[in-house]
Length: 474
Image 1 (cartoon, rainbow, N blue to C red):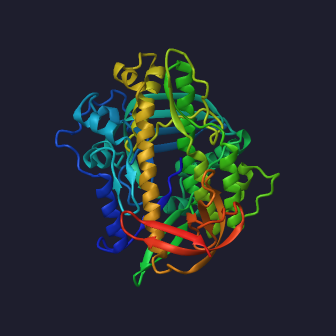
Image 2 (image 1 turned 120 degrees about the vertical axis):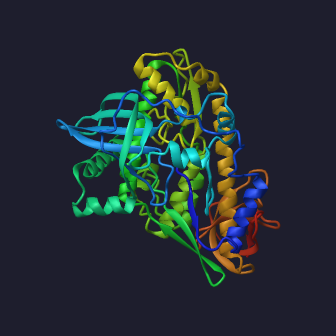
Image 3 (image 1 turned 90 degrees about the horizontal axis):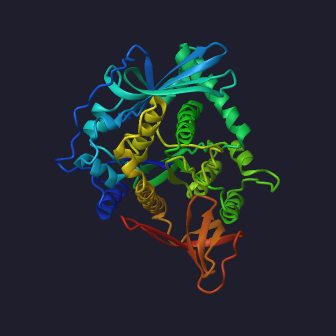
């Protein structure tokens, strides 16, 4: 599921940063690891692939580098080599570090910093695919035809060495100017081919923009940063690998899939009301997928709607199977195909297990006992960790929105009622036209008019870790 990217700048003692620090304390979120939770010295793989000139593409400040790639032509098609950090080489099953990873489940992202899944000595050091450093990896080789369709897949443990740490803006600039050499220039060619196949199969990629909150004279301003095309092309390589992993596991009869049923009608109806509130034309004959592809994340109202589109992905879960007994649901409705999380093991627990299953399936060996032993409890662990990440995200959004509105208590706004509680029709949520905020609203007596425009008054904008924004009908 695309994460809501919110970035906060300013001094640590600024009220908004202080509220985020207080939130981490309240939630018991700490970067500190138990002293005994230390990475093991890895056994390096026999297969040496350090001659492949891999490169990474990440935000410029990132140092927890999960993936490195190399792209080349293969006849009329393409070859994608995709190295994934081999976290299992450093984490001994049943060790204190393994136990701590199972407790944390995912890296938690706050607008001002992150709380990692693994110690920084591992996630930003020994296991990270930093340039010019030999690293153990799960090296995927995926051959594509001229249309970008998968024709062959291999994955094996390999020693790799990235040659360059690239960032999205630099990659976009090189490709747009024609200065990119073939391994990088092919990112656009392959990425666009995979995007066409995504449309063909009915899949949807949300180009969720980044929100940036900046402080000016003790007030806060909200801006959006639209993703670059290179970010979408890069995501298609990860998506390609996740789909290949799912197919391998289904073929082998044991695996852990990322699944998502079709969105319920009620969720789609709420999203239609949000589109109406944000003045986005969504004719009834236009599908959700078609609408999403027409949106321009550079436009604030479209950006706000893309954030709300992520609500349709909240039903995603992890589905395990073994011994050839396939589950009832094997697909992810947004991907429109079977899909697995396997490309971000530094930041997500399940990926370590998916990678091990794929390695065993391709080699013809048995899935390790420590992987099989964890499968039954893994979905609940991931659900609990994902729920916690969602709690963090919602609390951060509340804090940011309270900061944006703190000086406007008593002011009037135009909005639309996008949600009303079934048992309490006087309670719901309102989507403001500007700023693009969704917040609780409560009427003293009358039921809220679901889907209708409403003049509202801000009656509460509390700052701090327990931030709360609340409106009432004007």
